[in-house]
View 1 (cartoon, rainbow, N blue to C red):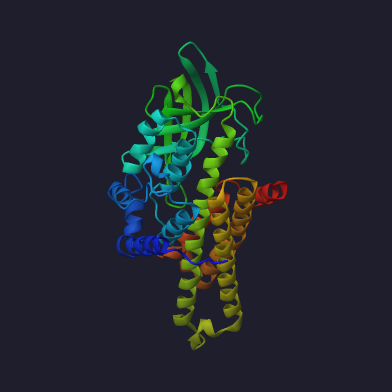
View 2: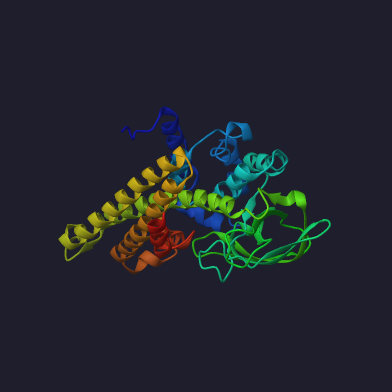
Length: 376
């Protein structure tokens, strides 16, 4: 089997890597992350101009017809630069849900502006009691003459502070944990009854806690089929998980390579610490974990490109388990081999470790995906 990239994929890889090197140095990234919004509108507009925002969408929807393999190439480079722009939350989660389940009118209203870089949707799906179980939904949507009235609470809404559209799963029938009875609603983030508490996350991103109090939505705000929104929601979350895992691959590569270079120059007892065999073994372990994670990312991306089904979902869970295991080892070893300064804000090592730690818990942690892998 030929695992080499096509000419178009090589061009994408070269262009995004050049962009990261030229525009996303660590100091520039820190300045962006610490700004008022936590990301750069100017860079987001450049993402749109270069076609990255339309990459995963079909040509019929105004995109470029990319697959999960192209997504992996893009997000791996983003991971190397610790990019804080909301690509995963806006494009891979919300955008892919709209592309798969939206009507032509909904796509025109929200997907086209997303691809153009003028809209930032977000998915508000996490509830405090759910513990990675996406069909554990207390938020309710009660039907009335005009549409629905939505009430509930959503936490850790990535991209929530600057979102103009919220995709909200709410229960329209059944009991709290039923797979049936969940409906996805497209809600204006500035609608009456929507309140947000915004905060920065440990890895430099921004998120919100969102309270929905008697929010009125029309019947046209339903995304996909009523009572059948769980599969559509899971589809979008798995697209986001593929992107986050690819990002982890890029972060792990930077960590192990930076650690090797540091150990060549840091001296102890009159010689570089990289000459100590026990530290060489640790760096080899870091390299192996990165290579295993990258191999699983290739496999998951190829299976996802062939179709979204139980086989691709199983591959994604296997990848997520490896990201949790390998990312933790690589991050911990990088910090330890750099010494105390490995966790200072002035050095990039600790920031990569924080991002890997956050990715481990996104979309379900290692234990959750071990169980999902076994069940598929």
